[in-house]
Image (cartoon, rainbow, N blue to C red; front, side):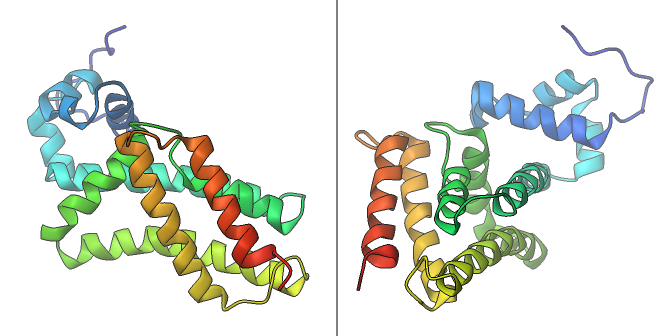
Length: 202
């Protein structure tokens, strides 16, 4: 169904634009995302989109921040819910990893990472803020697991850095569709790592 016509020069709600970006990435990938095509989706000209977002890089970063805010809400619900610390850690990992090949959120993440080489300090600081939220929640889980006796006592900061590096590596394999790397396999490998390094009797 085509978008309803808009009064000239009237911008749609920002969230509508960001949601349209994610929907386009999910359906057609990043190659299918153009300012002209996005403008048609939301009833704006590409010129007006650039007026509000300045550059395509900024549009992608704002879309990533919007998507991360939604994931953050889900993550907080998971982490504050019932269950053992290990169950909540497994839920965290399930949320962290891509759903599969061409997961739109992770596809966007990879593109923003790639573009960050030429980004300014502000953009890199905003990316670091996203990373920091995931890291802090993981550190808190690891520390809680150690305090409750569910996990070995480890340096939570150090272990969280190692675990997230493992998750990031597997996530790249998943989202690009590396042959022989499926989500179920990755979850098994991560579970093995946790059992060997965190929960096995020492």
